[in-house]
Amino acid sequence: MMATRASSGFEHHRSRFEAQRDKLTTYFDSTARKAWIDLTSDTKVSGIRATVRAGRDAMREVLLSWLPHDLRRCRVLDAGCGTGTLSVLAARRGAEVVGVDVAGGLVAIARERCPSFLGHGRIHWRVGDMLDPAHGRFDHVVAMDSLIHYRPEDIVATLVSLAERCDGSIVFTHAPSTPMLRAMHTTGLLFPRSDRAPAIVPVREADLIVMIEEALPGWHVGRTQRIGSGFYISNALELVRD
Image (cartoon, rainbow, N blue to C red; front, side):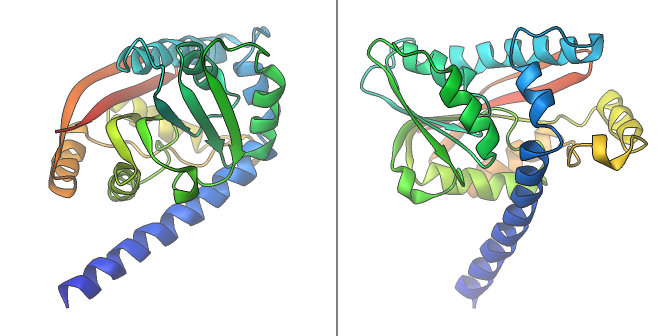
């Protein structure tokens, strides 16, 4: 009976994850494609988007700093790679990177922007599900802002799935539950639907850590850090295999 309930719970989380993933695919491959191309380039953007760009740059540096400096002989999964900046930086440190995203249009941009020379590193660009076991095993997994649209229980289920194929660490971000972010989220719902991203889900860090520790025996939460830059607020967590 317990096994049946566990299986049923997993299928429920998986179904909800896939439904949200499909919404994100549609959004990033249509409505938001141009905006994200601009945001992740040197193109001049509005003041609000400039704060988001600065926040994302700072968060990317945090997550990369939690990985070994020398990534030679390491496989890294960039789960939700977008236009590929983090993948390129990890590859330049020697990693074999799998950069995967559900938005094919963003992965196409990542391929176009990818330098021809990456030193000892290399990148395999893929369009699809970050949880696909066909991607293989990894020493490290990075999921930057790719889980912020999911409920805490679905975040944890996703981490459990990723942990099954990770031998070292998982570094990821979630949207922290702060009064400012909740207010910004509420305000965002007033914008026209065509201009609005799928809802960000604010999550209390303490609650998420408890859920992770219960669901992932053999792993522990390491470092945490919050980045706040204007309209960008995100919280980083590091999970390390014991």
